Length: 196
Image (tube, rainbow, N blue to C red; front, side, top):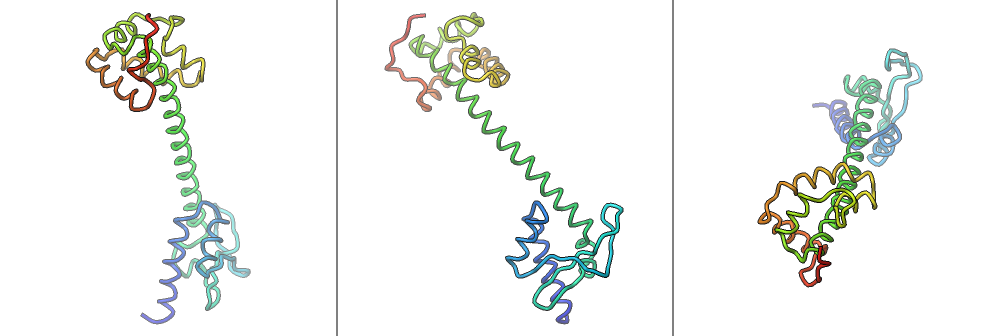
């Protein structure tokens, strides 16, 4: 491999690495600059970008400029822009998913607080909790969905699903739920019940 080919391979590797870390042209420019490579555009040479003719992408390192197309088809404006858009879209989805999980955890905490209150009211008696959940209706004291709705109405659909699951649990299975609430600090056996 001659020096020209070594340079091309080194540039391709650097650009590929930086491209994977970038979500926009500005990100890519910053990433490349940190590696000693500048992203630019050729003044004389054109290439197609989404059907339009634009200045060709060029990369400038210590040895001078080189066209992206000279490095291969993966380094043309079209392919670079496609990859930046895909990276951006993946990042947006990732952020939405992180936000959804964060909200779901908040909503679960609200629902668990409601269950903890019910366990406290019934002195931790899992049989009574099971019977209460089966018979309870909106507006009843300690009805979990009322508690959730009072804090955040957006949590109600998820809380409804959790309540449906808890309704299916036997008193023996609710022992596990009670112990989980204890671990979270949402229920303590030392609390006197409210005598529902």
